Image (cartoon, rainbow, N blue to C red):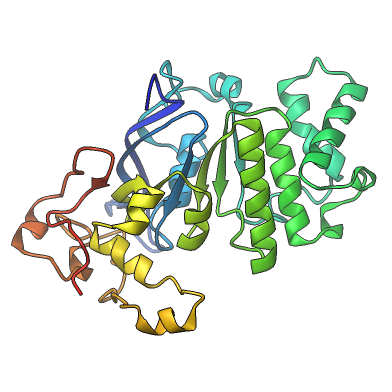
Length: 330
């Protein structure tokens, strides 16, 4: 990476304070550490994939970057501004540059607004100087760019399929010309055939518009298709991060190896021949994570040091947070 990254995240933490029904006022609240010390750089024009099991902190991490949830640490935008401590008013200046596409396409759209109004809303917020005709022209242009028809501009979200609703969400994110788009599991609620269409659309838009993407998913095959680099999360911590080729070709963390071994292979012969690395036990509660390495309770390589010390990521382009990294044990 040359020059300052578009976004540099340093030691990001997100914690939630929880109280149970019936707790006494003096009962100490419980603390859920949803994201715990995640750091990464994001170069301009790069696609960073983030994967992991449900509850590992993927969506919380995304929401923290745009101040939807409170966080500590640093998120340096273009080498100048730390976004995390900004007030809501000060953050408004950067929201046009950082947009988000949400998981549930229909739930993320206002059912009382037409498609044209939904897509135009960011323009009216960030560019109030634009006239009505200019706004309508930009809305129609971005609708055409994402595969929506101009004559659909006055329809409502419930009149569209899930894939079309996600295209509306993508158009809404892109209409203000952002530099970074955070895609929070944008295809998980769609049929497989529609998933491929939306992924191909995102790849085409990223290439043509020079977008930087953070792409969050639990489907590793989808992430491999779109991402330059991939980060694997577990219980809010980074387990491994590398280029897609290095991570999928030679994973070094036992958690990554287990996830990849579970990905089905379309060839039935190869599928029967592959070695599956099972994950032992259940995912620990984030309210009481294991000491040391949070993955140790499900790891076949765990030794005494794993319970005593938190593994620090290795140096270089292939980062592995493991006391005993290496190829899979067959």
